[in-house]
Image: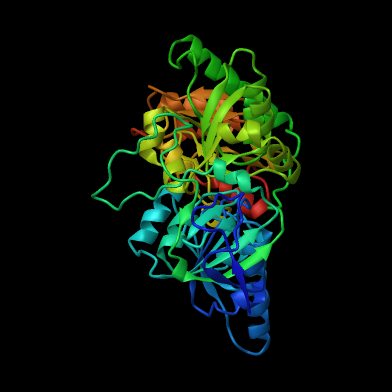
Amino acid sequence: MQQVFLMSSEATPNDVSTAGTAFPRLSAAEAAAMINDGATVGFSGFTPAGAAKAVPRALAKRSKDVQSRGGQLKIRALTGASTGAALDDALADAHAISWRAPYQSSKKLRKLINAQETQFIDMHLSHVPQSVGFGFFGKIDFAVVEAVDVTRDGRVYLSTSGGCSPTFLRHAEKVIIEINHHHAKRLAEMHDVMILPMPPFRSPIPIQHPLSRIGTPFASVDPRKIVAVVETDEGDGVPPFTPPDAASEAIAAHVVRFLVDEMKAGRIPPDFLPLQSGVGNVANAVMAGLGRSEDVPPFYMFSEVFQDALVDLMENGSLLGASCTSLTLSDAQLRRLYENMDYFAPRIVIRPQELSNNPGVIRRLGVIAINTALEVDIYGHANSTHICGTTLMNGVGGSGDFMRNAYLSIFVAPSVAKGGAISAIVPMCTHVDHNEHTVQIVVTDQGLADLRGLGPIERARAIIDNCAHPDYRDYLHNYIDSSRMGHLRHNLETCFDLHRNLMATGHMLKK
């Protein structure tokens, strides 16, 4: 075992010193060997950005070796949100995860979750740090956190995400640090780390502007808990977004037109309001559309992820600044950012998710939230997690944190999928993540429905006429007309016929 001497307590991430306390420098395999069956492990990562890589990959290999000898090595895995292939995919491929929270986007892990081989806790992301702090998940045996450096007194300079890493470092019994030399040490200039006190001792969070800084540029850990430092040199592996398709472009145009009209009507101030956008190609198209519009003034973001389109918007001045919890950027866009840190560092703040997703801050700043749904029913309930009410896709993630507290809550979705076989607008959602009290605006490539101030039947007509694909409009209108009278008109015998048809024939409408 070698020893690594890391920075002195007075040093900055750019001033490496050989003075100070030595932490054990181990290989990924040696560090993974410390983690035993049944351990609860908190991994860094919010999307693939800043996710631990070498240790989970080595742990997956070890799990396969143990299984080949007739044994078992499965862990309980906590993260900030989804992660990269080296974590969720590798561990799922090894059948090494028995329990997982709070969010995932891995096809391999999703298969295990839907087969009930892995228990999955689908959570609002802002709730995770407090749940860890109060011990809702039991003790945290290990934290495995990616950083760009660590000091002898336990200052951990995180890489491309904040996520839940500060909380894992505080509460884990043992800590493994992955020092990733791929990332710029100047990331410390973007991080703003603060852990909230536990209730009932919380004061108001003094974030008055998306770029307010209230903490430190590093997370903290008791250095006596650090049992290994593993050195790596590996990018996050965030895939570039595909060019927006016609549906995404149409959705973006509807959203831009609506927000411009709201500003002209005086319901959005002339200097605009902070924006939040979910992850994905539709969200990327919406942000690009806002940046192109001559009628939208330069704006700020208070969001979870900083995506590819935002690099261009910030460079051309459309995006003035952004608060986030991860730099979810493709290799090319992240390289552009690193090569121009003098410009980007003052304009980006990376926070832990208990701050980036904090309901009180979201409401105070008047955030306009834009997120994607799998399906929306005729009264405005939205399902963003489960296909046909049973099969998990990814999870609710941070969408609930923003949508429930936003100044404007906007849900977007293509009107149809699978060549028209699936309608995003249905009589009744098979699973509800966001109810009609939360959803204000629904947008598809067909159009936009403003539900504010509308009664149930008015909401239903607005959604069907403006958002449903023409192939499904007659069916949906007939459903309302034939349903039992009530505050919400429904027919419990037929409300899921579209879903039943899909499961039976592969198409929601009978041919």
